[in-house]
Structure formats: C-alpha cells, structure tokens
Image 1 (cartoon, rainbow, N blue to C red):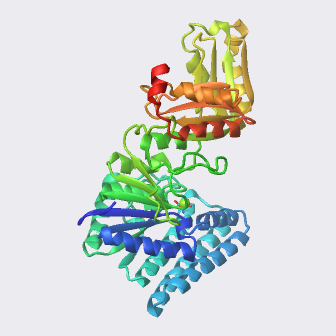
Image 2 (image 1 turned 45 degrees about the horizontal axis):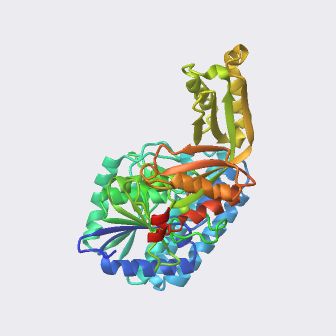
Image 3 (image 1 turned 45 degrees about the vertical axis):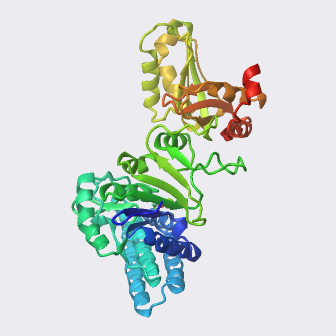
Length: 485
Ligand code: ASP
Ligand code: MG
C-alpha cells in the first residue's frame, strides 16, 4: 500500500466520516499518516452527515411557505460546524477566518431560502445551489482542521474543476474539460506540496452555474478526479470495513471481503446492497486505478480492494449474498405463445411504458410461459397495461393468463467463474433444499458472476443465512475421500 515518490493518492471521506469531532480527528490522523507515503494527496469530502438532507428539505419546505425547516437547518449549520471549529482549529486568526466564511455561506443560504419562499418555487437549478452549500462549508472547516494539525491543506470548490452539463440534480461531467481544469488548478498545488481539500458532489456548467452529480455523488467526484489527474490509488473512506459478504443485520457472521471485482460489486449494487454505486466508481476502474474502500473508524483494517475484470475465484462456493425486497413475479402463460415471434418484445415494451425496471427474467424452455420480477408498487399498472396490450392474444386464446404473485424477494449470490466451476449451482440448491426453502424462480446472471433466486418474504432470512454458509472456504477433499468417491 506504500506510495512512491511522485505517486498520487485521492482519498474521499463520506458524510459520517466528517460528521463529528471524533470522526474529523480520525481524518486528521489518516491524512497525516498517508502523507508519509504519498507526497501528492488530494482529499475529497462530503457535507457533514445529514446536512444535505436539511438543506434540500429547507428549500422544498420554503417553496410551500413553511420556513421552519430553514430555521432549524440554519441552527444545525451553526452548531455542527462551530463545535468542530472550536474543538479542532486552535489558531485565533484561522478560527476568525473560517468563522467568517461559514457566516457568508449561511447568509447565502438565507437569501436563497427567502427568495424561494417569496417565489413559492424551488427549481432544480436553485436546489443544486442550495444543496452545494453543505460541501462548500465542510471543505473549509476540514481544511482548517487539517492545517491546525500542521498539514498544508487548502479548500477548493469543485466548481473550478468538474465541468458538467446543465442537467441539474444529476449533471453529466465533461471529462475533457474536467481534466484540463483539474490539471490547471490542482497540479501547481500538488507540486508545492499542498493538500487540496475538494468539495464532493458538485460541479459547474461552462457558464459557472453550480450543479450537483446526484445524491451520494461524492464518490463520483473522487472517481472523476482520480481518473483525470490521474491518481495511482483512490481510497473511499466510509463507516464500515468495506464490502461485506452479507448484510450484518441479517447474518451476524458476515465478513469483509478483502477483494472484489467491479463486475461483482455491480451485481451486488444492482440487487440492492448498499455498497459503492457502480456508476460512480467506473471512471477509476476504467482507468485501471486501484480503488479501496476503508473504514474511518477502524483505519487499521485494510478494507476491500476493487479490481478490474470478472473477479478471482477464492476457494469458496460464493463470495457474497444480497437481497432485493419488495418485488412481485409476473407470469404470462399460454400454449399459443409457442413459436410466436415477438411476444416477449410486446410484453416488455408494455412494461417499459410504466417506467418500471425489470431486474430478473426467466422463460420456460417450452416457450409457454415467461416470468419476470417488477417492484410491487408498479404491479397494478403493469397488470393493466399487459391486459390491454395483449388483449388480442388473450381473446384468441394464445395467452391464457397474466398473473402476479404476492410480494417476493430476489436473493442474489455472487459466484465468480460459474461457467467453468463444477458444482456451484448444485451446492447452492442443495443448501436451499436442506434449509427447506421453496425457490419460486431462478435466473443465472448473464454476467457469469451471479445466480439469483426468487423466494417468498417468509423464506428470505432463511435463504440468506443458508447461502451465507457457502461463503466459507470449501474444505479440500482428503485422499481417501477422492479415492472412494
Ligand atoms: N452530500 C451529498 C449527499 O448527501 C453527497 C454525498 O454525500 O456523497 O447526497
Ligand atoms: Mg454520503
């Protein structure tokens, strides 16, 4: 993990990692110790935990004429940041300076909130300006806290670095312009040995209007900066030890995975695990930059290393298991579907008109039925559009029935190398059989790294626990067992 002269490290600290005095003390130590190995270091930070929610809620309430959340947020902005300044920025000149910046940004927020209240409207554009304030405040406070610890930190607004389009609240970065701007602004700072402390989450249009990259966008900011600098490594500091084998609330024995591929993490995220958003880390992975997820509250832990490719087989049947709740299974069935071209296309274009995502599809090989999962809250509308758009087939008797189950759960296991490893599916389904789980549908991920099954709500916990046992190393067979098997 040691850096070499000239090597660049980008570290991102999330909301909880900067959410309290204790957390920021850890950040001070982490940055100081990383500096011993990495002379070129860029720090990206989120707003203090809860602040972005407070800002957005204030703006939306102000548009409805309710200024109470605004007053509450102003109080929180003062209290949360001032307590950190008081505890960690000792120098009186520095304290006065960062206090003044805090006051200015809060005054800025007040003006915006009053304007929103007067207009009775909060446009996406103004919401981005309001929600950017959390990060713009936090970088100033964190940079001052780092300086108080003897580190040459400087706050930088990413509006000077990350260029985006004007798709407010989910702006799309322009990598070429971002690269040029980042080099111009950050390179001289790094050459001088400074530590830029950059706002996560935000960017600006070419004409300088503030934009945001979407909620949770600070990971994306760190990945973008890492890719364009380019950095040698990007470390995402959060409040857990890394990506885990399962949700520890369901499986107390869940462990941190030392290593996981981008494809595997994408499968986990797709099926609901709250890990890194694959879209947000893609720039780093594509650039072949090492990415680690680490715990601010347990910095000795090596965390999880994210790699390119499909993922290594690690001697266990599966690597991780995750659950995607709140789904229903739809089945369209009928003997007349056999060999009729275009039925599947018609079904899925009908579903697409509702805007629902379809995370899982399976088809009986007889072509007489097609089953797919959709979110529960879209089910009524989907039933309606399917009956409407397939009315002709239903009338002719080619389709007998369109029906949905009760609520179900999709359980996904990440199991690399499925295609060439014998017995993986066999072990998965015998584990489920032994646990008495009734599997309603199966999909073998076309990605080759996952297999998903649909189970009832009642069977969800049992399924996850039974499958989690397969994350333990498979015991090698003894000579005798091989001989007699
Ligand atoms: N502060 C922003 C949010 O809460 C961005 C982030 O935390 O990544 O969505
Ligand atoms: Mg966050």
